[in-house]
Image 1 (tube, rainbow, N blue to C red):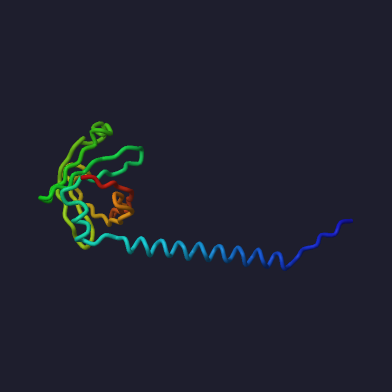
Image 2: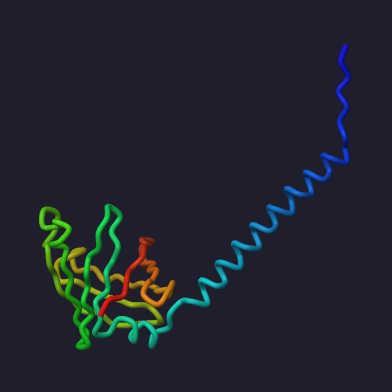
Length: 144
């Protein structure tokens, strides 16, 4: 017959260790959310980042779609390099503006002319993270 001995002090240590790791993870997630909120761009900062610039939107299947945010409030987009002509008009233009710390845009034909607005976070000098009002999100690269 075998006897199994269980050390309760070892179990207690493992429980408290696991609880500490869990609490540390929650604290780090909260800190990450707070720092992300701090990096949300304000209206003037959004205008400064996009006005007169080309922004390259990463697409899920690889590649980028260049959008040119003209200084006159118009935006030009092209999906030609990705071969998007099979799915939608390969190029389009529309209007852009900043409203309540969000970048808003409306295309002539893309998205059936629906207005979308985005919050933007600065990830690095050349990288942005965007979150669209319908829940879509992704990364973009700042160009000239």
